[in-house]
Image 1 (tube, rainbow, N blue to C red):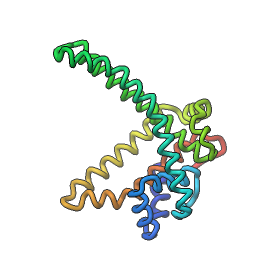
Image 2 (cartoon, helix red, strand yellow):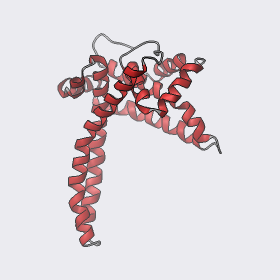
Image 3 (cartoon, helix red, strand yellow):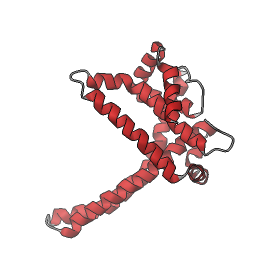
Length: 211
């Protein structure tokens, strides 16, 4: 899947500098990039041309809204778990119970955020495929899709890709003076590669699909 998605991004962007430049601009106007990646999630092969900017922008806004809605439970849990502990620490900075509550709250929040991110990734792809906002919250089908892929396989696949992108970002940003610029230039490629990779993970659990 890593090789196939890399080849997809390479075919779609390398040598097609106008498309790359348009996606760079889209990365600045963030909803445009999110909307474009939604077309990648739909399984369009090869990588689509950036066009139909109004629909792309609207789709990008919807993707952001879906992400924010999924983030709400995480924010509530974090507030509930750590809020009381924070007040306890304010009242008594040496409170072991307060600091212990903060640590436990952080750990639970991280675990919940990880689980929610796994679900929201597939939720966005389901919205892309079904083109219905409500399908992004069809938890029965989303959880079934994750189960078909396998929770462990899904997590490991994302972990591997995450390590690769962190290494790339670190290497580029270590280059004096121009590191951040180079990373920004590489962002469209990394984004398309990531979107296609996630799409292949999703399709690996879909009967009849194969990459």
